[in-house]
Amino acid sequence: MQDSERLEKGQVHFRTIIEVAGRPQEYVENTIKGYVDKIKKESKTDVIKEDFAEIKKQKEEKTQEEFWHTFVELELWSKNLPSLIDFCFDYMPSSIEVIEPKELHLKEREISGLLNDLQGNLHRMNMMVKEISTENLNLKRNANNLLWNIVAVLTFKEGKTIEQLSKITGFMPDNLQNFLDKLVKEEKLIKKGDKYLLKNAPKSE
Image (cartoon, rainbow, N blue to C red; front, side, top):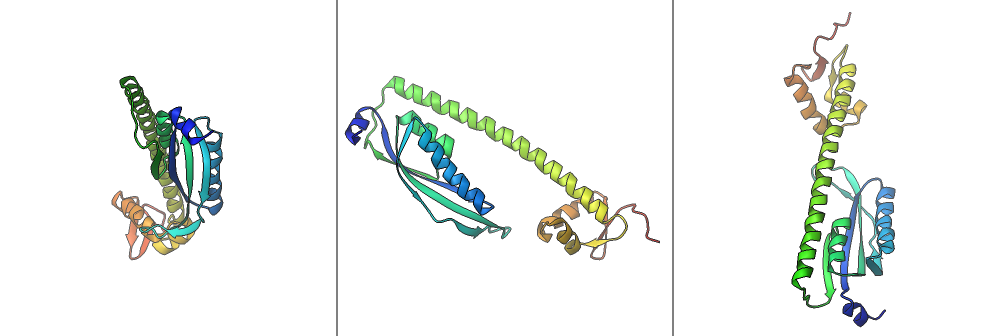
């Protein structure tokens, strides 16, 4: 189909960038390819060009933990403006550049429909965020309980330094420090010198 025909049908020509970050490397590679494969199967969009960037290893500034990052630049046609908005909510691109049409002329009914679709997507996203927040809260609570059980076992009979606990649990000392301080404040652990000991633990004979 010629570009002029697409424009007459109300289609929108745009360029976009989708980024993926995480670990391990295979996860990032598979995820970015999976996104593009899914977009190609969409009936509301037509991919005409794709350009994958090289995947690179990076470090998180605060924790210095390594992760992998890549992105893909796509050029597409969407069925109409609402389809473009749906695309933005579904794939969360880091940037969108509308190439054609240069101007958009919408009737009142089209604007109302567009706003309703936008509101529906915002409501759906809000519900997803709330669900994810609840799941993350449960995961964090379970992880804290698990870590507490491990620390309790490790400090049951004799004290352990934060370096020893870090080596066994796999948690970085900086991340473990706040957790141990909280346990001391809650009087679950006792700190003697540089070692942590379970409170009310039996004395070693």
